[in-house]
Image (cartoon, helix red, strand yellow):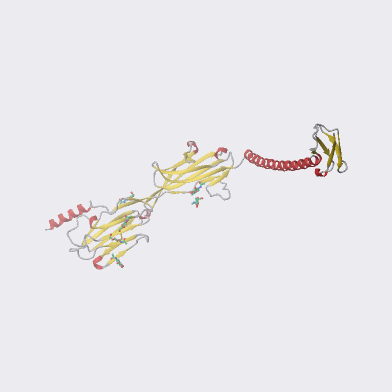
Length: 370
Ligand SMILES: *[C@@H]1O[C@H](CO)[C@@H](O)[C@H](O)[C@H]1NC(C)=O
Ligand SMILES: *[C@@H]1O[C@H](CO)[C@@H](O)[C@H](O)[C@H]1NC(C)=O
Ligand SMILES: *[C@@H]1O[C@H](CO)[C@@H](O)[C@H](O)[C@H]1NC(C)=O
Ligand SMILES: *[C@@H]1O[C@H](CO)[C@@H](O)[C@H](O)[C@H]1NC(C)=O
Ligand SMILES: *[C@@H]1O[C@H](CO)[C@@H](O)[C@H](O)[C@H]1NC(C)=O
Ligand SMILES: *[C@@H]1O[C@H](CO)[C@@H](O)[C@H](O)[C@H]1NC(C)=O
C-alpha cells in the first residue's frame, strides 16, 4: 500500500514536469500585452476529482526572494483575491461554480504594458479535494526584450534658425559638422546613416562606439552611439541626414536632421544681383510704360499739330460749274483776310490756303475766269 502511494507520487511528479505552458511565448517586448492563463489543461497528472477547491497564479520577479500569490480564486467559498497586481493589469476569474467546475474554472491575468521589472518566473497552482492535494505548473521564465529608445540627433555647431524645429541647423561652408545618434535597446542593434534616403557615401566619416550593457531588473539594456563627422560644403545645403536603427536588416527607428548652408559672399551677391535684375526689370517696365504714354502724348500732339496745320489750310474746291479744261484766272469773292490763292495743276481745281483754322469752306465762293 505504501509502495503504491510512493509509486503514484513518483508518477505525479514525473508527469508534472511536462505540462503545457501558461503563456504563448517566453519572451515579450516591453510595452506588450499578453495573457497568463490558469485552467485544468495546464496541469498534468491531476488526480481524478470533479472540482477544484481553488486556483491561483504566482510569480517571482528578480526583486523578489520568493513566489508571491498574485491572483487567487476559491469559487465554492465565493472568494477571489489579488495581491501586488500592477494597476493596469486585468484579472478575469471565470467558471468554477458548483461541484463539477473542473473544466470551466479559469484565471486569466492580462499583463498590460509589460516591463523589464515584470520579467521572472510565473506559475499556476491548483488545489483538489479529498484529500486536499496541491498541484503546480512548472514555472515559465519570462524574459523581457527592451524597446528601442532613440534620442534626437544632436548636432554641433547647432545654429537653429528662427521658426524651425530643433532638428535643423544653418551653418557656413567649411565648418566641421558633428552629428551624434544615440539610442538604447536590446543587443545587436546597428546605426545606419543615410543622406537624403541614400546610404551615406563616406563610411570613414562614421564612428560607431561599442555598445555598453546594463542590466535593469531582468532586462539587458544596451546603449549605442554613432557619430557622423564631415566638413560642410556648399552642396550640402538642404541635405537631410538620417540615423536609422536596424535590427538584422529591419528598420526599427529613425531620426532626421537637416542642414542649410548659410549664404556665402558669392550667393549673397547672386541674390543681390537677382534683386538688381528685378529692379532693372521694374525700371525697364517703368520706362516702357512711360515710353508708351509719351508716344501716345506725342501721337496726340502730332495729330493735333497735323490737325491744326493741315486740315484748316488745305481746302480743295472743285469748280463744278466749269466744263472747260483750264482756268486762266480766278477770284475769291467772299473770304476772310489772309486768304491765299493758288492755281493748281489740275484745270478745274483750285486750292485756297488760309491762316485761320477750322474755316468753313462753304462760306467762300469762287469766280473762275476762263
Ligand atoms: C486575453 O484573454 C481574454 C479573455 O479572458 C481575451 O479576450 C483577450 O483577447 C486575450 N488577450 C490577449 C492579448 O491574448
Ligand atoms: C472573462 O472570461 C470569460 C470566459 O473566458 C468571458 O466569457 C468573459 O467575457 C471575460 N470577462 C471579461 C471582462 O473579459
Ligand atoms: C470576485 O470578487 C468580487 C468581490 O470581491 C465579486 O464582486 C466578483 O463577482 C467575484 N468574481 C468572481 C468571478 O467570482
Ligand atoms: C530566467 O532567465 C534569465 C534571463 O535569461 C536568467 O538570467 C535567469 O537565470 C533565469 N531564471 C531561471 C530560474 O532559470
Ligand atoms: C525631438 O525633436 C522633436 C522635433 O523637433 C521634438 O518635438 C521632441 O520634443 C524632441 N525630443 C526630445 C527628447 O528632445
Ligand atoms: C524633426 O524631428 C521630427 C521628429 O523626429 C520629425 O518628424 C521631423 O521630420 C524632423 N524634421 C526634420 C527637418 O528632419
